Each structure stands twice: as C-alpha cells, then as structure tokens.
Image (cartoon, rainbow, N blue to C red):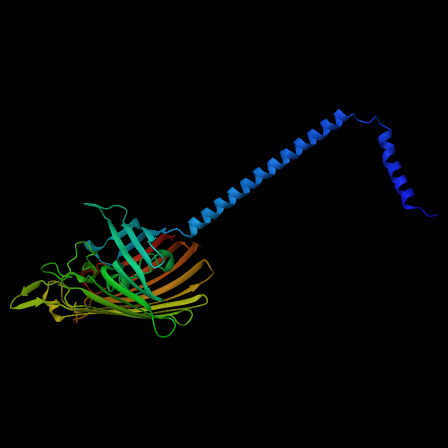
Amino acid sequence: MKFTRSALSGLLVGAVSMPVLAQDAPSVEELWEIIQKQQAEIDDLKGDVKETDKKIDATADAVETAAGSAGDSKLSIGGYGEVHYNNLQNRGEGAARERKEEVDIHRFVLFFNYAFSDSVRFFSEVEIEHALAGEGKNGEVEIEQAFIEWDLAESQRAKAGVFLVPVGILNETHEPNTFYGVERNNVEKNIIPSTWWEAGLGLSGEFGAPGLSYDIGLHSGLESFNGTEYRGTRSGRKKVSEAPASDLAGTGRIKYTGVAGLELSATLQYQNDVMQGAEFVSGSEVAEGISATLLEAHAIYNTGPFSIRALYAQWDLDDDVELLVNGAGADKQKGWYVEPSFKVTSDIGVFARYSVWDTAAGDSADSEYIQTDIGINYWLTPEVVFKADYQLMEGPDAENGSNEFNGFNLGVGWAF
C-alpha cells in the first residue's frame, strides 16, 4: 500500500489534534497569561546567568590579583631557631667537678629580605640568643646580616653592608636542619670562628669551568687585644658594634661544585694587625702590628644515603702575640674534623664526628682538645628536626681536667 505525502500529513495532523480536541481549548486570555508567565521565567533565568557570570569574572579577577601579588611580592620573611638540652659532666676532680644540666632556647632568628628590583636586593638576619638580652642577662640581640646585593652581570654580584664571612661549612649555612649534632662543632666554633660576620664590600660569581665560583671581600677585622691580654679569635669578633676600623681584613674563597654531590672549597684571609693599631710593652719588648692569616679548606661528598664532611682550619699569627698576657702558643691555632653520616631512611640519619682543635698550638705545652660525637637526627619534615647525640671530650692535662665535658645533648630545630 502506498501513501502520498498529503495523506501522511493528514494522518499526522489528525493524530496530534485528537487529544487537543478531546479537551476544552483555552481562551485567548488564558494563552496570553501562559505566555507572559513563561517569558517572566525566561527573564529570571537570564538574570541568574548574568549574575553568575559576574561572580565568576570577579572570582577570576581576585584569583589573578592574589596570584600576581604572591608571585611579584618584594618582601620575604623567614627564620630559624633551636632549643637545646645539655646534660654534661666535667671530667675534673674535686672542686672543679661540675655538672652542666640546662635547657636553653639557644637561638631565635628572623630573616627580612626585600627586592628593590630584579637586580637589587636587601638581605637581613636578626638573632636573639639565649632568650633574654640586656644588663645582667645571658643573651644578646644581634644583627648578623644587613646588606645590599646587586647584579653586575650574568653570574656576577656585588654586596655592601654586614654579611657573613665566606669561610667554612657552617658559617654561611647554619640552620639546624642542615647539619648533624645538637651543638655546632668545636672546630668551626673555636678556630674559624662561626658564626662570624663583618661589614664591608664583597664580590662573588662564577668563572672558568662549570661549578667553579669565587667570593672576595674587604671588611672589618678582629680586635683580639684588650689592652694587656690576647683574647683569641672568637672573642676578637666585634660584631660590627662600634668596631675599630684602623686595620681591615681581606678574605677570598674558591669553591668547586661541578660534580654532583661534591663540594670542594678553600678560603684565605689576611689581616695586618689584630691589635688594631695598639701597642703593648712587655719588659724591654714591644708587641705591635700582629698580623694574622687564616687558611681553611673543606670537602663535602654525598652519594645516595651516605655523606662525609671534612674540614681543616689554621691561624698563623705574628710571634709578637706571645708577648701578650695569655698569648703563649697563640701564634699557631689549628683544628680539623671528619664527619661521616648515613640516612637510614629519608627521615632518619645517624652520624659520627671526630674533632681535634688547639688554640695555643705554637708552643710545646699540651693544649689540644679531642672530641668524639655520635648521634641521630630525625626530620619531622625537611624543615623541622629533632636531634640527640653523645659527646666524649678529652682536654689537655690541665689541673683537674677542667672544661672536659662528657654527656648527652637533645635538641629541636626549625627553619622556614
């Protein structure tokens, strides 16, 4: 049977019309009312869509603004700190025998850095030691860094102000999560001496082979003489607090990091007069113009979970230093340590350190200290670390073996 187009159309119209005809057809007024209601609903929907679009655009603008502000922020803030518990027994006998059992917030440090432009920056470091500062208090408030750095060319920079002297392993990188042991090692504390900052001018950059860099500086120097006594290199730091500047010091360092996991570094410093122009008469002799030369070299090697650090440092001073009170043997001061470590897991590491140092090695008297440390670090996060170690110290054969402390140390440290 064959249907024509007109026949099919008739059938479809009839099929559609039958239900409508079966009911009462709405009036014109009712149809108009229905149309108006539908139009109102359509208008409401259009309004909601427009409002939603506005909110989306506003949110996107806010996100872009926040992201831009965070990415282009000129001010950055950071810091670190550490709390220590020491339980140490002096090896001396009788009255000299004492116990060091104390808890101390050793350091609380904040960094404030600001980028003036893509090529000019400001860095600062403010530290509070031992919680309280002021007359009769144990601690100090110190400005360890406050300098301007600017780019001279690609991979070449200059700086001016107060900065850390480029020497040793810990002096520039001493956040507690970056090294083993609760206390900083005695070689870098007593020989170098960390932490050590001065005021002056510096240049740094890369040259020659990949990974080969340099740092040079002309800056304030030590004042290791207080009128009658030689007071050592560590006590000679003036910390840029009305520091005498009649005799400056120069420091130069070369560092190589061109092999993965390896760092080799050597530093040389020279100061013409650690007495800063003063004189001291000892009998018929006059001590003056005591020059001082520091040589430091170290190596760090990391491969997988194993790491090793080794450092040697030595001071050579003019022989006149022996004319000063407490200056015997001080014309040569030296120390070294070796420290292997192993990461048991990504969060737990163990270490051992063997250290030898002598701040009066220029004569035949026994003045050498030897210390062995073993311990463990647990990094709760890469920035938060818990530490525990045991130390065994052997000092010179002085009366009662004073200042030879054995025992254990606990600590927690953080950096951000």
